[in-house]
Image: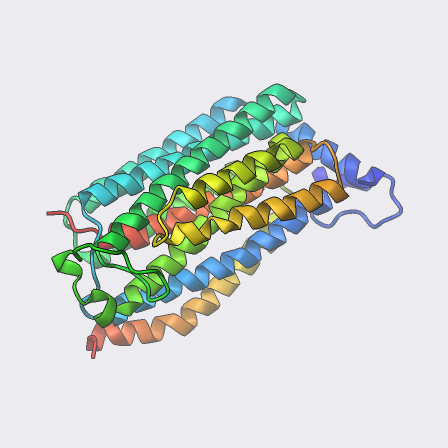
Length: 264
Length: 112
């Protein structure tokens, strides 16, 4: 029925094969390619896991609870995102902005908790050679030599979850631009300063915070070149991206955290 | 956006307007319940292969709910559904074909 209705829309172009607008098809294609990126990373993690003896199980009850709260944050953010899309199609601009901000808040909560999880693991001695050494601290007994004997753990864990964290961060920025447009740029710059100056020099987030600066520059250029009021189609496309990062976490959470839990 | 794209966007928006809010809350509740089940299983000290099977099963159900309802794919035209899902599943099957034989060898012969 939807197919036949589309044939009646006059255009100089051919009717849409997928029955929807180009931006949405473009986002779906991007998400399909991103699925393969995460698929490859998850396969690499799983392969490393079963092919390596002495695989560490660093996730105690506290880590599992932390990761469960992170999951709840992401699932709730997906709900607030669909409510933002719903508000946008009903042309309720105020509720649209509020739901988008709620989604961003949940996403930020996820990033903060994830950052805390990373920092704890690094402090316990699970680290990558590229991360700066934490000064004056005692490595946890169970992780002595793990970074040397099973380097696959840190490489695959930080690679996979870091890639996901980057996606969530970019998602929050994307939603910020859609919700607040130019007003979001100064907020992003403040967040960059807080993240950069508020983290110690040995933390990977001290350097990772510069992603926010790069994003502020890129978003500034985009908003300067093509200023516009984002409509319901833009909110829907942003929503597709956001749900995708939630979707990916539905596999990372059980495979990485729950399958490597150490519950005594 | 040209007139055609705007008409398509308006048509998609019209489809969204017919969806009730309650459905999204049910899906969200189902996702939270399945997450709680996953965490509960973690505390049950199950055999790893059995646990992996259950966890992956639940993950695929959660993924289907997110794609179908939150990402709205359930309401798209059938060409969109089939082409997107078949292409990504085909690629993931190819990855499995490369990965699985060696993983099986390791599981049966052990880690050397």
